[in-house]
Length: 171
Picture (cartoon, rainbow, N blue to C red):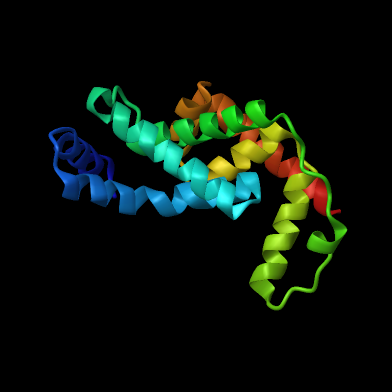
């Protein structure tokens, strides 16, 4: 979906068109859910955070004004804040479970996912976040800049450095 189509759907949804809201839901939910699952490593928690993200987004949608920010960047900013709020409330860390992480995997996709997870675990929170936003959420550099509230040049530099550190983690 391009930016113009997105803006048209947003305007219709703001006017109360449920089909437009459904189209937005269908377009963004898979990437949001993938981002949340990768971030939380818990399907149930990711589902809860996805629902709270959409609840806040739908509640605030009538006041949403693009101002150069795409709806997807706005949604991912809400999802990111929902994760942070959850972690603040729970203030817990997930302990390493060897039985869960060292189990046999059946196919190459699972092997690849496990390898990506292991590499991401060796990176800092900021590096993991920028890699998730770019490659899992599939946001543009400009959208990431808006989500993180930094300059797009800083995003490119941070992303380049995060990928370099990820390559080092492979060695």
